[in-house]
Length: 133
Image (cartoon, rainbow, N blue to C red; front, side, top):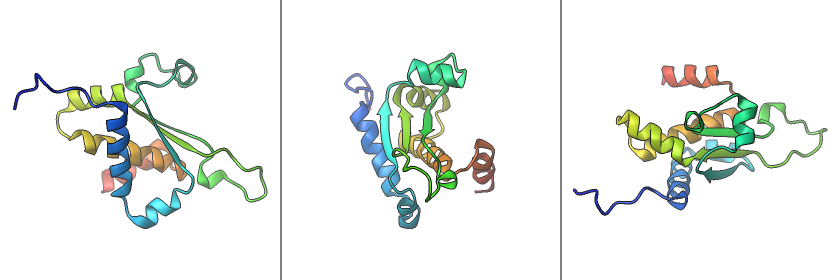
């Protein structure tokens, strides 16, 4: 196989891989995500990076933004739809550095990690679950 005619996956290609990863999740799990919106960007915005104290945009492959399901209240105001951001350039860089996972597997990993935050799990919770799997 030659790579001279290959192009990097576009934002639309990433969206298709993320959609496939989501569709491959168990139906009950997908239903429980509710109104979750997925967005693919090349990098996190400068504002997001500043808020998180991250200087290098390649360090952030994904982000959950919203009110997680554990903190929503039936009596409170209706929250805006929660969003999962996947950052194409950062994911591509990690994929190239690692070399031990397909691009689809890495996108699925980041997607599931961010959906974990939607369910109210911390990074430590998610890492513990991954280690036990």
